[in-house]
Image (cartoon, rainbow, N blue to C red; front, side, top):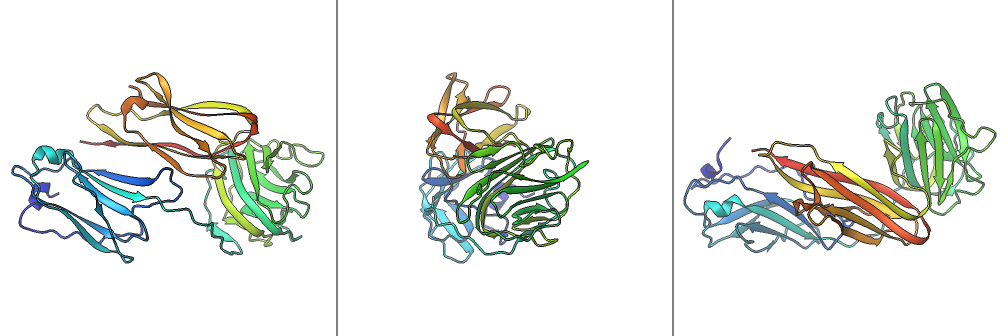
Length: 398
């Protein structure tokens, strides 16, 4: 590799055009706060003596109606410059002149992009007969796992009598050979599961549980052959009919085939209406029944590392919602003050993507443990749906 100082001379090395299909900075209207900040640390720049009088940054890309800036830190921030890119991706140059920067200044160099979060737009729904993803999700919905959860929002506009080979009508979720979920004409959720030793189809709910022309939330929980179904705000822990647990005795699912949203492709039992926020989880620990006083804590364990490695980019990513207006508080334990610090406290009745970046080591101990707490207290019962709860972090290797 070429050393940095070899590039800082009378020769100009033009960067090659990058692939913007896989590498880009993404600004989402779902992010909390007023802006999104992407920072890059350049603390290995070596000029081998002398001073730097000019810093020039080239950025390849385009922006669409966003207020975005770039800034450079060299002992202090040099001053943000508007990106002012066009609608077509090209190289854009941003220059800071009249500088006198030493090696000490360059050792702490950072580049920061700041973008104002755009306003949320109206959801866009496209028309499909079905969306086939091929043979995917073999781990959560396959022969190596006996616990999974599926959640979806459904808005049926018509019910038909056409059914799959497994007796499921108006199928909106299927993995060929081992799993189908649909709705019959009476508004019951119908589930087909083919596990090792048990193959059955069963209905859950009551008549009219899934109405036409209205959004309903559906959650299917499979826990070692025990099946529970949430429809709207009501849990159904037993199937309709004489057999309360028709899948009892099964375990891991048999090996399945293509995964399809909106139908199944053998007899073409398909769903008519709108589908949104379909999710598959490889465990059953992320759903919670009705409650009025809720507090639960989670300890995230970061991998240990050699002392000479530096920890950076520690971020807690979270996404949840409630079924009604209800304040939920997310807190981190401060190992310095020995108390919890609130990082988010708000009503979230629709899913969002929240992010908290650690700017202090107070939130993890010498064992690199992070203690987080989600809590909510209400005079009436509410439901919490936890969609994302992840700690991301990185090490720098000297």
